Length: 279
Ligand code: SF4
Image (cartoon, rainbow, N blue to C red; front, side, top):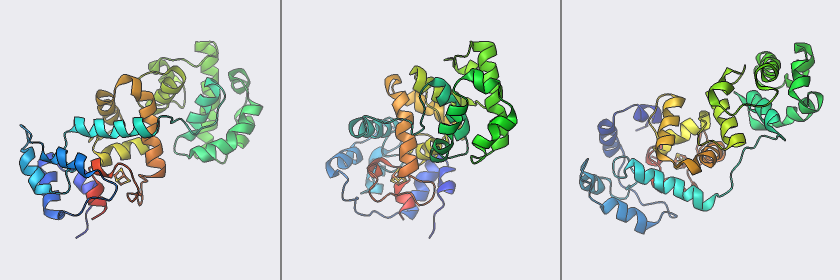
């Protein structure tokens, strides 16, 4: 029987539990899972949702939906990252807020690796907002032609620089609403800048964060904004800036869109979709 992750993610909580119960027999825990920890979670009765019955039902899958509360799942996953990945940062190369803003605009629908290949020459040619604002489309395009959507991005970069000069004295603003007024800057880009440059307690949700949050069971939000709200509701303010990087890097290198590398993933014991993906 094949199982569609998208199908399961679209089910209600009760339908999901029924689906999983019917589809997934108990199997041994992954070897690196802590038996003691998962046993205690499984054995803990819940006043809501029949947790004890679910613990019996799911046997060796205490990390399945409904047995762990969402709070427990957050605590375990964020706790693991905090303990094991105390340093996590953007893989974009930049030297100041202006360069980061340019790089993040270019990174939409494009890999950081590709962006890092074009930005050294771009920053050398246009080292300040003033230089970029004075450039023409034909001046900028050759530098960005190898990234996705080069026409739109070249125009956005010039218009962004012109607005930075006109409205912000050439400085990158810290306010998210002001950032989102800049051409080429959406909510995700604004949150990245606010988080990295100004250490604001916000979480940018890109395609990696969206996917990983759903698979792990951290959110069922149907839009990036809904996922952002879920994550910010559960993750302490002081951990939000780094949590964005934890989830992005996990999605980029381990929980990849196709063929997630569940073997060796350190989060299997708390991952909601692990049993479905590895059926
Ligand atoms: S166990 Fe698999 S699906 Fe779950 S977070 Fe790890 S890689 Fe992703």
